[in-house]
Length: 347
Length: 112
Image 1 (cartoon, rainbow over the protein chains, first blue to last red):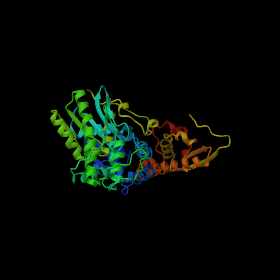
Image 2 (image 1 turned 90 degrees about the vertical axis):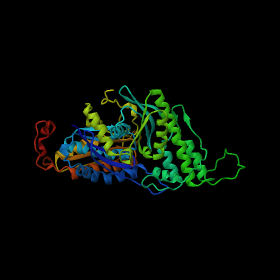
Image 3 (image 1 turned 90 degrees about the horizontal axis):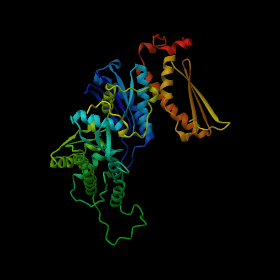
Image 4 (image 1 turned 30 degrees about the horizontal axis):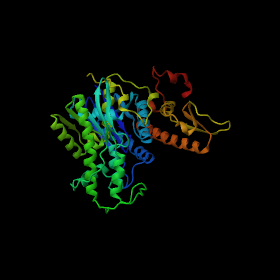
């Protein structure tokens, strides 16, 4: 029996989760929401987390109906992410670990997403598409590592969506991606956008610049561009959202399909904040069904960053014998998925 | 690697008292983990003086000294708040319950 408390705070969500042997006991979360047109900055996000975290720890223990002494391990997100918000989780985790005399474990954020997805969906050995505001990776498990097959070479897919939402001043509540998805449902007029797949990798920054020009013509002076003869067409926000989603999701489906073909796998698991986008799930499902495969996806409780995934991945690490001295309980902005030795899987 | 500090550095020492030596030691261990960012050119040294946490800063520029102290206080306050809200076990009361494996506390017997 491993009972773990997990603290996640690598981006604009602060969440605490408690899990005991794969049974969810508590999962609480608060999101730092900025005004339309503004993104979240490290310092302000850390302040938000500092004000929310202790109340959330209390709420999670209450929801789980547990005392601190019932816990076997305290887990926190070690990275990757923004340093100031990460540090908030780490400081509280270290203090609780010493106060309660409970072991401490730092967990890789990406591994948390993957293990949570596997637990909730029951997928055995899927190709994992990890898509969020900070990460875009196609991952396959082999020989005790989650190996990165393909990834973004510049910004993450969620970052591309978030920044586009800021350009057209969409609300960040509950999330910019959700509001883009709703707006996209109102259109089926496809505008041709650049489609950037490079081998197994993808790129989104050029698409963002291109669609930025369409959304606000003349906002950026482009010296290299010749004066255009054709008149500027005014596209609606819905058209732009629809076309952006269709283009970038098609790119993700393409590299995921290639990873499936390479590995001979017929399971796909989508994790990360963008993973709760139903249009992405729909496109991926069509691809999977055409190949005789199966898609696994979760809803926003487990897709979007949460403390539970850190607790679960930490519990798996703890069960397989991983321990961490306090001196190593630091945070790191860069922490790649394939750095972690997956000691808890036997296949 | 310690950053190079000039002969006449700007310095600051902060003494933070805690309820008990145990709580001071917890704060000391929690706050010792994080290194100063290298480009800050600040040297931060933590030590314990009974139930007082002592932090010493050295820097070439007053500006970087201020930045280091500000971010240290953010972490310190969070650690103190955590102790305040969750450190209500009997051993965190001023009378220190002695435990066999608590070898570190025995050497510093001036804790009463």
